[in-house]
Length: 230
Image: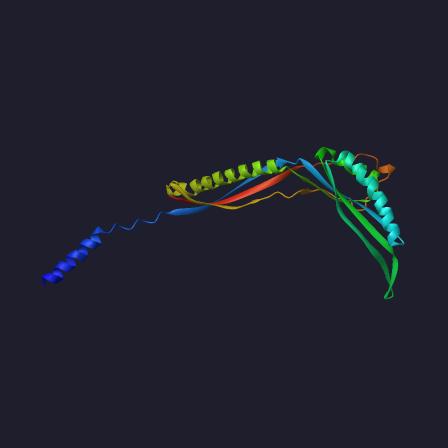
């Protein structure tokens, strides 16, 4: 009988010695977001020469001559010029189910970079020196500017999340106690802003007015999810 009482008393002491389980904190999960707009610092132009002829040799020879002229002209004004794509392919006509070779078509593409305010003049110079198409024009900021704006957007997104948490807890008479977790949802890296390409835009003396360009701004978005206790 004494053994049973002693065992019960020992078990009771062990249980009473264990610390009380900590109460789970009340939490709220909120999302914050922010937007930063930055000025573009570079214009990117994809210009092309298109040539058609009866033979592949003639197309290749003409394309090489015209490309040399265009390349030299763009290098005088652009910060960088790179060859983008060169292709040569046959052209066919299909009449009553029959395939007839019409000739060959060749394309030579150059990518040129310049300051946004010089983009219009560079487009005009490209067409004046043999370009037959403007396939694309886009604008972008420098890597340093993008990084700075990205950091600012993330910081503002966290502040926005904490503001929302306080806003949600206020009607309950509660306040944010601690930040338990911050998760970055990802920052939208800005893609080059597209402009309006002029497809097969054959410029002539009648189109001598400078090409107007309005670059605009790039937008960087950041989002975070924050978990806070209250």
